Length: 244
Length: 226
View (cartoon, rainbow over the protein chains, first blue to last red):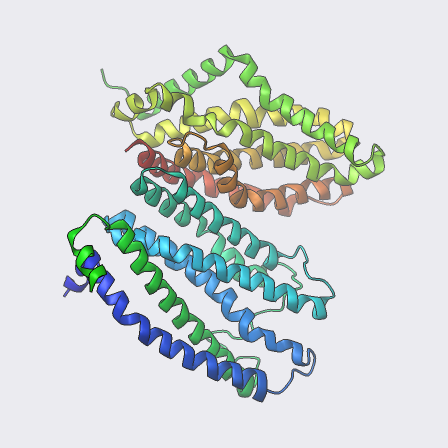
């Protein structure tokens, strides 16, 4: 029953699975994002308070969500690698870090573009914004720690441990809106509560969220293949895989 | 001859403190750094006491964080360089006891020393005497928490030749909540309001890191020693 789990430790298997998954993930991501963009930017009604400016939510909220999701992916993959000594976990963590950092930057940039018409300023020292900025610094710390070691194996382990320590920041970001008085609006879409949005606005947002997740999966698979090839460059199967 | 964990802990603590006091220049460096950094602010911003009083919490806290961080790089370094750390790790004692002893020693010679010296700086910044006690308590809790966080960073970077900047890059994001609550407690104390809420938060952070950071720092050190 657990054999599939052990096979995930095998680099050629991971490489093949990632290669096979990539086009499908890309296809579904594109479908979701195209629907979400058209429905969200064209068909959804303007917000009664924020007008058309609210439409940036279709990029901002998914990227903010993905910035945390990618961090958790990185930390969990690193944790699995540390605990069960599965080297492929380090490859996943290394592949996820730059993507997560990019999503964090995207969330910060779209958020500040949103903040200008809504709050009258691009940046406010607000708990949500500040903790998201800290998340970006954590990504930078993890990536530069990995790069600082000459021995790649030790760099991987050190970065995985730091990512695990940094997980304490994730609930702080997630709940910062509720814990402190924040300029940032509260969550619009909660899992177990009725969302504060009409369906014509909500469905495109959920589609964008799924699309972003699938896109993250696709980019992760692509980067993962590069990581695996680089890490296994001395193995004999790589020569065959690259030729094919 | 077998030595219990507590005995080993106190022996290492004594050794660390003895080593620190044998090198008084290194002991004084963070304190002098703290003084110089706080002097920079009146020179660069404004020498008006009213303005300084408003900025005092932030200035004190940033300076204390940087001064404490400055000395963190050496937490494991000298022992790692001459092989003492490996001998300690091989001694059969729990590595976490070694980490705890070294971190507590670090806090005693930098954090606690900064706390003792902080009223001097606070007076220079025009802080009212009534705010001294909460300010010192917040600094004591904050620097201890920072020592724990720094032990994780120092454990991770001890194998690197130039880990100093990287150490700051790793530790400072984690230390930001400390700065927020610490400066807030001091700020409220100056304004005459009750600093209890922020102090409780600092206390919680201190307990949280004191219990979990030794585990993380030990794991970090194991990675570096492999």
